[in-house]
Length: 94
View 1: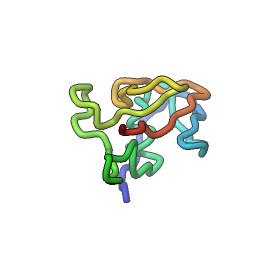
View 2 (view 1 turned 60 degrees about the vertical axis):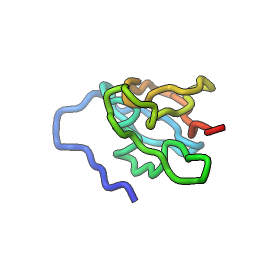
View 3 (view 1 turned 90 degrees about the vertical axis):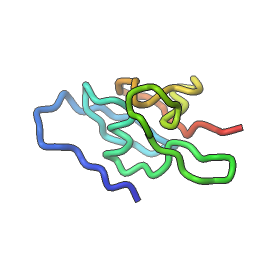
View 4 (view 1 turned 135 degrees about the vertical axis):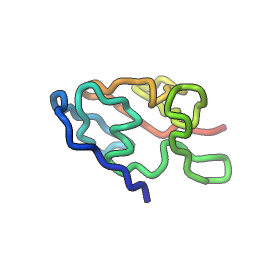
């Protein structure tokens, strides 16, 4: 289980995104990775053997945080700002 939380700070406006069909509240100025972690998402994708993958470097060097955004594959969540209505799905490992 992911145990991330948002720190108390001034935030941008609330946004709504979906991850695997479930609505998640995010805030303007957050990265997609931070919004998903704060929402308790336990796997951004799965390995070929079914193990969960989560952000590793959180600075865009690796692709462990890769997700599908609005049907675009291999979007690095740690480099992508949230925006209203994003449709996010797990990246399928082939």
